[in-house]
Amino acid sequence: MTKHRVVITGLGVASPLGIGAAETFEGLVEKRCGIDRIAAFDASRFSSQIAGEVRGAEVKDCVPKGYRKATKVMARDIELAVVAAYHAVKDAGLATKCLVERGEAPAVNVDSTRFGANIGAGLICADLSELAGALATAAEKPDAPFDRGFSLRKWGSEGMTNLTPLWLLKFLPNMLARHVTIVHDCQAPSNTITCGEASSHLAVGEAFRTIERGAADICICGGAESKINPMGLMRQSLLDRLVTDANDRPQTACRPFDAARSGTVISEGGGLLILEELERAKQRGAKIYAEIVGFGASVNARHWLDPQSDGRAMALAIQKAVSDAGIRTADVQMINAFGVGTVAHDASEAAALRTAFGDSSGIPVLATRGALGNNGAGSGAIDLAMTALAMQRGVIPPSLNTDRVDPACGINVVRGDPIDCRAEYAVSLASAMSGGQTAALVLRRYHA
Image (tube, rainbow, N blue to C red; front, top):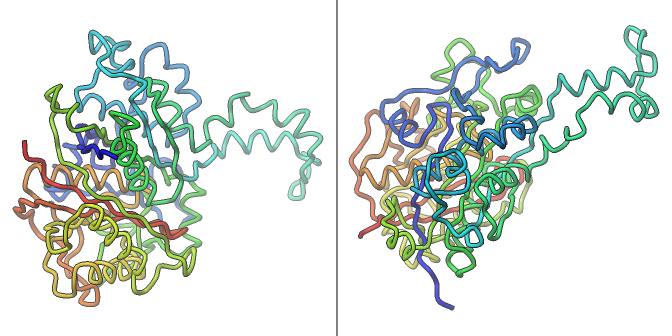
């Protein structure tokens, strides 16, 4: 089977540092932080009251006028995906159905039957206020002060009628891909992946394989998620993963691989990439950020919640990706680490990097969570976009708040100021904090 070469021609990002991949990258270079006290809801009773919130993500500005009614059934996660998709398509110079209907392009220049989509999603939280109001009307004893009870009969006759008939469609994980594919008319293979923080890498890896084997010419892929809701915050609090002593100094809270790290910070964000078959991209004169040449995946078979102390699964994913790329680990000149900021997860990832690249490796490591927080299913695609830009521009941004790398980690995290690095090959790694799925991608600098 002939393998087609696959390149990245478009980047769409909605992050706590801004809308657009370039704005997010420049924020990292300038050492800005997108983490602050939570404004989306009252978090004053939570032990951790900080998060990375996305500002300026106006979904109505990213869909055709005739599709704006559909935005009423979009949860926050879906909105982030639709915004990221719009910016990715525009950045790639594609004229999709969406851009034509918005009057931003004269005619469609994409064969929709060869345009696929793979999008990672998280556990979308229901609108708690809306749901609570409906549940209140199904109380067995509505006037009781404490023990109201719940009546299935009243829920069927009254409670459910207080929810819009399309209510559930706001919270299904496949709705991210559903809206993106409808808006941009993507009719080739499509899929939704829900594997926590590894979702984006797995989605991009699947899109890479789809184009590589000739089943599509273009794929929009990545992921999006918002953890900024009471359930998302409570879940991570109960798992004891969050920084709880930095509510008064949120911008210094998340410290990837730092000796003084104490946890992660919830966040939201979306990243969607346009992958394209190389010859098609060249024929239309597309801007090419980088080439994807290797993909590997594995899973932590030891425990669904706790990371492996030796990082064996992550090391295996890296080794598979490097082998798939047909190179040696010695050829890699840049690493994009997940670096979530918890003591155990960072130690596990550092162990994996040492196993894959050697204990004495001086390969520069890019870690973005100090500035962005944990964007869930959107983390990986945002990181991949930053990796592609770093390779294209020859600059690796520093890791915010990593003042002193933990000696036990033993990796070369970029700190202080951006560094020049004309990496020929880069490895990007992601791992789900719950579930243990892990994926790695190898990017190569594109030479015309």
